[in-house]
Length: 218
Image (cartoon, rainbow, N blue to C red; front, side):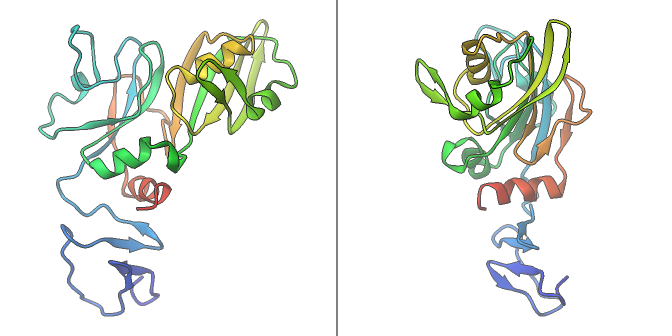
């Protein structure tokens, strides 16, 4: 990879084999993707169950994200939120700069949701959602909308957004006459929920972390 010019350190292509770098101070990219090199930085994915609040503590004593990483000593931030009745993918990290960029609307990191709603789905629903739905705090637009399956009086739909206003998916669908029955976030940027069971945590792969860096220009 070095011979092919695919490795950069602090923005400069590395040509010399055996070049030494300080991973705590220098930034390494391979094929344009940044490598996580700080040994004390942690990147985790959790499938938040229904009934758990999306915070690292709760003054009312409700189950929180902290309950699932109680064995860790790092001070972790949760990246984004899901309401208590929504399950799905939340990222946890102690990389403050990455966490801030992932949640800042200017970077437009997309989130994908699956929602169970009452059917039948009218043909123009996707067009309406992408054009924009008028809510009390302004217009909300979907980046994409797909019907995953329809069965009797219910449908499973997929909606992708890049903003994170409170209850945004539920409010958009309810406004169109399809109040959400069940809701789950299945992707956050390049990270997929996959087969991760509710209440379980996994470490992100080096590729996933690199893809997250790339998504926010780090």
